[in-house]
Length: 287
Image 1 (tube, rainbow, N blue to C red):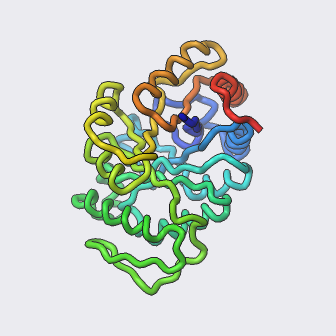
Image 2 (cartoon, helix red, strand yellow):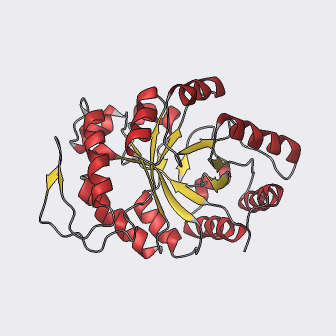
Image 3 (cartoon, rainbow, N blue to C red):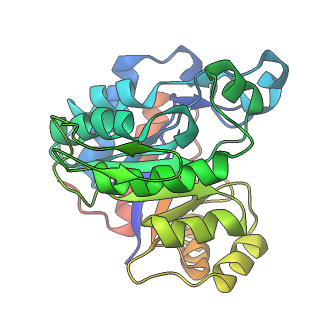
């Protein structure tokens, strides 16, 4: 069964990928989006991480990225059911125990609603800014994933790996569960293989249908593994419901188990109307 979350507006603003109203939106608008998605039965909402983006790539990447820990903590307080997904946090910017403590606290505050989406990272200038090693970031990410799995939900975790080692340290509070879902981002076969080996799901970006299908066919995945996909373009469930259902069928055919929903919208009110229309269209479990 496929579940549907929202790719949250406002918190990430990529040129050409957001509406004008989002540029002036703040906490009140964001809280309305989250509360509406929660009431309508959406599975999750998202927030991504960039600490600072080079001005030279602003036209391509955009520069508005709300901090995921602060943002999701705020949204946890105005929602009850919807899960809180980082999509994604860059592993190389943080010690695994720092992630376990900070996001474990969020998991506890939200009643166990955390999904920890993680990535290896690719923006070399940001790595350099933060003093984080870039060249061996893939190997470091592998070790960090193992360390995180051993730390989440544990009061006294221990890990002895090639990059991270700790023992006899107490993490309190910690996540409610030691099986917090881990989604791994990426767009390569290596990222999917890493996710299948060390995480619970794969959340790719920047791939067309043929590229996705080829990778998913090539890499064996364990039972219960999530494939987290988005639509190639925003859907219009209020104006073109048949096309929206076709988009759903297309991502299901690719193997999606979780879908990031993006809808066409021109204002906050229109966005909320579109969330409601899509919820009714696919039969989400509204409160």
